[in-house]
Amino acid sequence: MKNILVTGGAGYIGSHACKALAKAGYTPICYDSLERGHEWAVKWGPLEQGNILDKTRLEEVLKQYQPEAVMHFAGYISVEESVKAPALYQRNNVEGSKVLIDAAVAHNIKQFIFSSTCAVHGIPNQQIITEDLPIKPINPYGESKAEIENVLRDTALKNDFAYVALRYFNAAGADRDGEIGEAHEPESHLIPLILDTAAGKREHISIYGTDYDTPDGTCVRDYIHVNDLAEGHVQALRYLEGNAESQVINLGTGKGFSVKEIIDCARKITGKTINEKVESRRAGDPSYLVASNDRAKTVLGWQPQHSQIETIIETAWRWHQTR
Ligand SMILES: NC(=O)c1ccc[n+]([C@@H]2O[C@H](COP(=O)([O-])OP(=O)(O)OC[C@H]3O[C@@H](n4cnc5c(N)ncnc54)[C@H](O)[C@@H]3O)[C@@H](O)[C@H]2O)c1
Image (cartoon, rainbow, N blue to C red; front, side):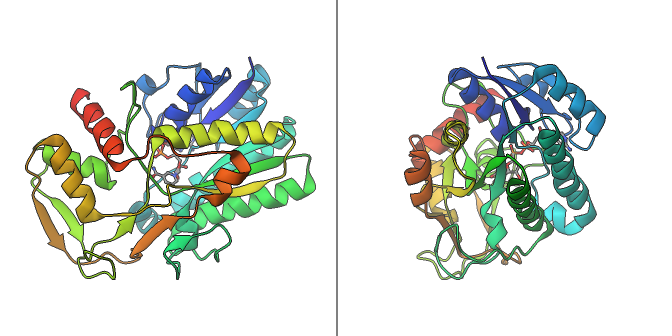
């Protein structure tokens, strides 16, 4: 079985990718500092604790397992934190990724899959986002991802190395078998915060702005089930195994839901009262962020299978109750 190094494999999306890789016949080697991940989420291959900034440890693991490819999820993920502590994001997300990419090239790894984000576009001037829209991040988190996309492009130009940068929209939901799910600390994502409110752990869910140019005035986002994201990574790997050229590809459903629609759906699924509180807009929140997923369909043959909003909230709620 081929080994795949999965950095950040103890985190939310990385652990679902490890499960999908194992199902597809690969051995995921989880490389994670466990700073923001969970040992319990590593179930489908060995856990090698380490930091991507630690070149010596990384090389030791690469030498031991000789992975065919790298899937790189490790990083910090909060826009808000990145604004407060930009140097932290520069070091962990940018410098760390550079150390990892250099080590991968030095170890003759030719295939690399990177977790990027639609945040590289900042505030796009259209509702449906295609991959070729301008790269204009508006916070250090988005900047860190845009910078690594550039590093990957330059690395592929100079080496026998190809990559797929997958730009996720809003990752959501939990494993459909209930084995793993989202557990960020602190949590900043909308659906788990709504479910915390449904479970009585929070008094209300905050709605930041009801005067956006959208049908109900609240922000519209594209929610993609984490099992679909994970499957997209396996398909990107298979694509690269066919000696294909590097790509930047959106992973989203192409359909948007407003904050109010998500809250209403959560009320239906949980049967609970979910109090809401309207607050002022947050800086840098675009009205719409919805993916064009044509490239994922044509290049990878990928189709979202589990991203109906009810499935996303049902799986997240089931996971939330067992935690
Ligand atoms: N969650 C989303 O909606 C979303 C959207 C777009 C992009 N992404 C990207 O996807 C990736 C995974 O996101 P997630 O939600 O699973 O995050 P997560 O915080 O659940 O997982 C990240 C994992 O990386 C590990 N890690 C962080 N820095 C590390 C380092 N220097 N060395 C080793 N391990 C390190 C953490 O311990 C954690 O287990 C991130 O790169 C994120 O930027 C996420």
